[in-house]
Length: 125
Image (spheres, rainbow, N blue to C red):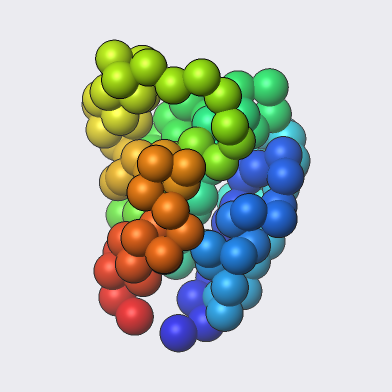
């Protein structure tokens, strides 16, 4: 198990639970994420929708533009409660896939257990 995961999130508690057992590196700003990604490889990148004042798509594009990270799975995740509308959720998922994201997970809708199963499948563990 014990894969390396970059976690871009404003609140590390929820994703820490889902990603327990892996080596986690947390970043809270886009600049910090770019700096960390410039010097290391990761088995997975997880980006919260609310990362750095909703800059999830900026980080997703950055990861996909970098040759060294192009094959790294990227999961974009909704971790906080807010009013969800089916069309908005579908729009987020479509945008994530269009920008090269591997998966979009709404942790409130699917729960931590299912999210962990999806992530473990992506990591091959």
